[in-house]
Length: 453
Image (cartoon, rainbow, N blue to C red; front, side):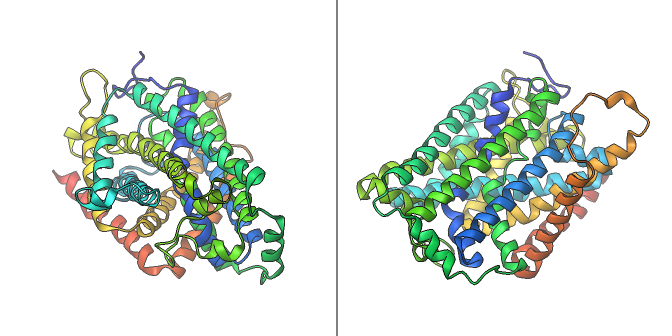
């Protein structure tokens, strides 16, 4: 098996890469976030528009990342791109944020969601030592241990889980359309008829940001570019196939929700305002499965969240590993297992941080921090592509390699939309976004200290 420049084994092919994208993206958001979006958007039409906006933004981001990934196919993803474009400090802050908020925050959120889905399905997790929190901690430990095996094994696991959960979501979606006891297009028409019209750019931005959690993770696969075969081909292809497929799946699922349930029922499903209520996905599926199908339904939700959690554990640890290789993190994090060549120490430390976040934050808090902090650096990567293009003027060496289409319009629009969403989040959620900014800022003295030692 061919090794990459940093000693990792290139054991993942195109479908493994695609499964990592789709497997990381498809998690909990499709079952939980539609209600929060409906509460601010006010009608099915604007909820669907927010899903399309979030999906289009994610596809645009994936196309921009694909060029950066094809240019620099190394472990570390956006950390590598920012280091090449801007130098060590911005790259360090990106890796710092990914390590302390992005990856472990996502892992913790998925673990908390699995515990909630298990409880909804009637599984006796409250009798588990520590209840749902203890159960979530065990999940973090087990999946992290599993990802200390050879990367090809973890990649196959991601592929199988992604295929299973995509099949289950399709089955639930078409089951609702074909066999729902209450399904009716009148629900959509009635909700749209009383719609107050466009909810305003601020509310629409909040709805779009909520949808972006359901799409978050498309950037994870480029972090593993050092372990993907033919990365200049498979990284961009995997990103485009994975994100495009997820967007189609999400739109179908949301149409099914609005077909199966009155809008008033969707508004009172599980959310911050109704934390004990069943999720909108569970309510919609129950219209054709009935109460007896709740256990099976919960298993589908659990499988979806576990798949995303597994892919995040797999990809996230490559960032501190890459930083350690560059001297921007403790050198011992660059250690690889002798046989599988996996950064097991980085995986273990990531698991410890995720465990602390399980003890500290709620699901909505964790997802808010992850999305806001992550999109700061997604925008920075789009700026890096402009810098790469400027540096190659007159240089024909890159002709024939993958290039982001519609340049410079596509990355410019992506940058503008990212700036709007971040500014709107600062306005609508100053506490949560302020905490995210503060955690990033703490990385500056940490960088200066590491540079001195």
